[in-house]
Image 1 (cartoon, rainbow, N blue to C red):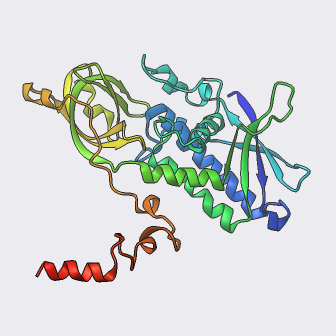
Image 2 (tube, rainbow, N blue to C red):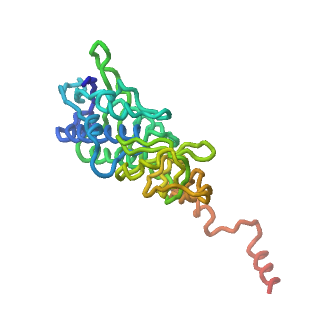
Image 3 (tube, one colour):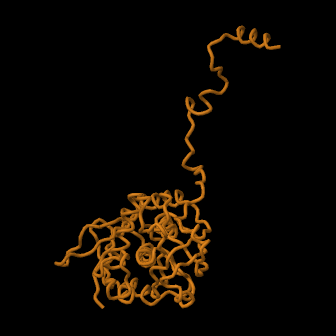
Length: 320
């Protein structure tokens, strides 16, 4: 299996002179491995997690091999490690690649995929296909490492052909965590839907499928049970009872099927793209700090007109 050498540049807070703690370095390595696995799962099946037993290829893509720990010169630490190329670790998935699948390059690794995902989240791309709410929560969990374990930032990089470390292609820090939290709050709540279309793609290696709606729109879906239960429905018109998952932009990301059966004529009504329920008000985003001359304080105890008190009292008497 071909491997690619990567690096993490782990820096500590100013209170520690930029030096990360020993436990912090270990926590970062564990967290990066999990985040890389989930980011890669997201790229293959549009869902960052698989219910039940993980397939072997998903464990293999995140099998990171530490090689060295170096001093960066400013008290930060550089952790050097190797990661398997996806074309080798997930060969069975690439073998069953569909015409419309947008997989990572086979020469890339799970770390490359994570770096791309972090970049999308840091840029607050609300329409991105590279993350879901579970992956946003995974990035949010780095906040605990930053606040409790003596780490301030994690830069993700690699080595060029001459073995020289490149600048980090993405950085996970407090700003990244804040971006993940914001995108999570923007994401519409998942909702139960019924969708009808042609079962146009079905992949056993990661239990992913595509539905082709009557208007030609393609809907990505995941099936968490034994794929054998729906194999006979391949290339047929089906109706699916599912949980619709949406991006922060409000567009559909995927459906998580709970049941699937052959469709009848009446099910054509359900051949349309699911939409989120009316959005809830984000009270945290609506909150504004009040000053003496803003908000309620600006009008409390004041009459908006220019009448004198005598004129106001006379006008009230006329109303009797």
